Length: 209
Length: 209
Image (cartoon, rainbow over all chains, first blue to last red; front, side, top):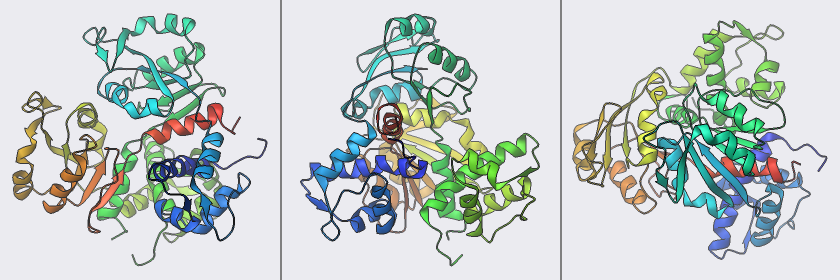
C-alpha cells in the first residue's frame, strides 16, 4: 500500500477490530457507522472517513456487514498470522503479560522469557521457562523472534533493546519508562500507563468538571 | 468549563503534559507547534487547534513558553492535586502497578491493596499491605478513595466495581478484560493492552508494509 495512513486512524483500527470481534461472537450481523461511533466516542462521519482510507467497504444506509468488515480490518492489520514473542524482564509486569492468555488467541505466541535475577531464572510461568538473560543473544541467533516485550527496569532497557535489534527482532513493545534510541528498521510501541491516570485526573478534577 | 472538548483532544493532553515535563526538566525554554507535532506524530496545525480548545496560549512565530504551557496543561488536567488510590486484585498486574513509583510523583498515592487469595493477604508491596477483599466495603466507609485500579480476574471485576461505586470511589482504572456496567457518576478508564500488540501487527505484517 503506497498511500500513507495517518497514525490517528491506525490507532483506532485495533478498537474497531476489538468491537467487531465481540459483535461477531454475539451473532450481530450489521452495524451502522453511528453505532460504531458511539463505541469509540467518535462521530459517524469520522468512522466513515476512517474506512474511506482503506477504500470504503459498506453500503450507504445499510450499515456494514460485521463479518466482512471484521475480515477486512483483520487483513489490513496483518492479524490472522502468528508471531513469536519473548519477554525480557520477568518481574511483575513481565509475568503478568506472560499470563494473558488472550494474546495467544490473537496469534502472539510466547516462546521464551528472560531475567537477570537468579531467583526468577528457572521459574515456569504459564508453561514458559524464565531463562538467564545472558543467554538472550544466543537464543536470538537460534530462534526467529518477531516481537520482544521489554519489561526491564529503566536502566537496562536501552542495552536490552540494542541486543534485540542486533538479534533480528522486528518489533519492541516497551514497558520501560524510557525512550529507546534504535534504527529505523525496528518498530517500537511504547506503553505509557501514567497517561490513563492523567486522563482520570482530567475527569475528576480538571476542566472537564 | 462549559465548552465540550472532544475525547480525541483530551486523549492527547497527557502526551503533551509528559513531553513538556521532560523538556522542563531538560531546561528547554521554548517549543514550537512543529516540534511538538513531531513528538506526537501529529501536525503543527493539529497542535495549534488542540490548544485553541483551551483558549490558545502561545504567540504566533515565537513558539510556546515551555514552563507556562506546562502549567496551563497541568491546571487543565487537574494535576498538582493529590489522589488516594487503592488496588483491588493484587496478582502480578496489581503488584506491578503498586511498584510504579512514578505514579506517586504525579500525585496518585496508593493507600491500600486488596485480594481474595489468602497467600497474598498480609504481604507488603512497596510499603502497602495487601488486605482481605472482604474488608473492602468497610475500608471504603472509613477512608476517602478517589481512584481504584481493578486488577481482578474477568469474573470478579463487575462485582468489585459495584462495591467500589457504592463505596463512593470516583474513578475506576480497569485492567480486567470486561466492559463494566456502572452509573454515570463514576469515571471508568479501560486499559486494553492487546491494542498495542495489534498496532505492532499492522506495522510488521499489515498494509503498512
